[in-house]
Length: 134
Length: 134
Image 1 (cartoon, each protein chain N blue to C red):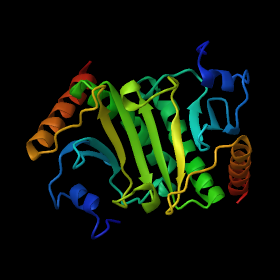
Image 2: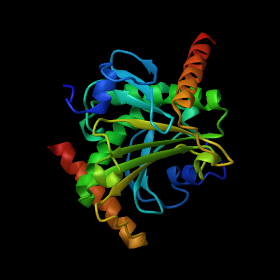
Image 3: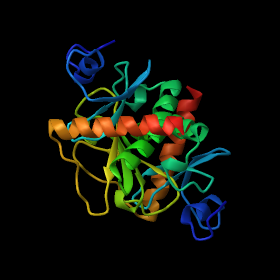
Image 4: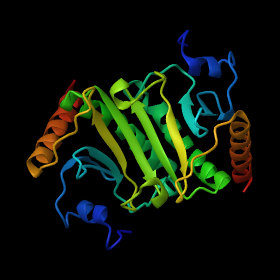
């Protein structure tokens, strides 16, 4: 059930371009405008209250892998994870998404140019491939 | 492997008092000092990088249930979820914990007195029991 005006559904359907890091039949991982990965179910599920147990497990399993790859790929000192449910919690896109933020001790933030997002996507992808081989 | 100076391990072992909302063999849920529930594995696992797939699934399954119960019990408008990995990400207790924050449109915060924490714990517990019956 793709929301006709849901920007994440449009990225999933390749109707608009996205910086896709990883995907399978149920889950997609793409870069946010702030240049960090987000884990997103392909089905248009608005929030945690509507997640199935199976999909929740898949998201969290993916979160382990994406967190480790993001930390390694960006030489981050830590990983901060957030997930918003409802406007009161700061949710802006009403399609479930888990943010995986790389964090550094010097508090710097990723650049957010198109080029920087492409580089970050490619670097995390390479790290995922490398870690799957080892 | 309980860390001898880990405050969460001490709560889990009942060496110091905690406001426990829910638990099973692997997971415990207790109130933070800020008066919101945290989902915590009983094993002393420092961060997401060390989580097993099985435990990750259990945590996320529990997160669905605790989020719904917290929202209902507190008449919150939304739920904000965070989880820190490493000092650079703001981690202060090095035992994995997922924060489940109730959020209201008027931006109020829960009271943090002992009494308020006891009431919040009891209210969420009651809601969990109620939802399991229905």
